[in-house]
Length: 337
Figure 1 (tube, rainbow, N blue to C red):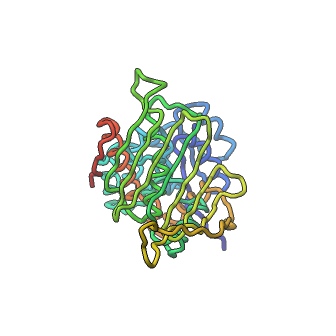
Figure 2 (figure 1 turned 90 degrees about the vertical axis):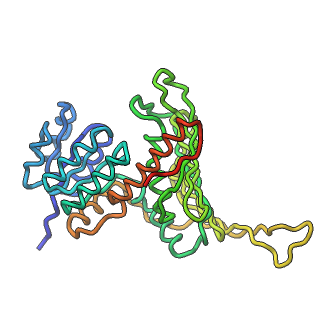
């Protein structure tokens, strides 16, 4: 007997929400789509899901067990609270909230009501990130010393958020996941070039400090001639590079490092070790589909997903610290717990 999967609704079917609609329909679990824009509603009718313009109609639908919130970030908190209060499990697009207090309140509300709260940190489900996580946990790279995250493009220029809030959540979530730690402090400096009247940073260079002296450098920009989606992980045994823009070699592992010699002479410091460069075979799959499958699994098993609300809170805390550092011209700001 085939097990019936939980029904899911998508709230916000424009922009990135269209991809949620497509993926969930492909999985056969899309039950409802909600958007106040008539064009967005019309484009979703071919899925066969119920179409609504008001959230209250979605929440009253007994066929809907989980709700994906893919609206603009300022509305995330209000809509997620309403869905949780209605007894629905919730997947909220990133960022979870725009303040630490709001993000924490959502996590506490979900825990109190026994609901799943998941955040759309999509790249945690990328097969290469999963492979990197397995390698790090197995000690293949040794002790991870630092990461460099570059997310650049000549792309969509936002008018309601800066490049830090728009792009950095991806890299902050990946760094914390791979390091199995939460940021302790952030220093960030940015540049305002395109919308000076709004004071919106188009490029940000951030340094995130973790425990045991580990660092993550985060460079985000929507004003760059190259499309770059690259993560470098430097361990004391090996190093790895995840190039998501590459079509055939998304992961490279470098058997390179430095080792102290047995006897240090006057002209001798450390010895550079250079070995093979390996391109591991990683079976690819669409991260969004894997994210949705993780959400469905969490609904069915009641086990917290890797991108749970509390991990989303840690990202919001780091984003807030980075925003305060930007306002303080790059001064390091401790992350508030």
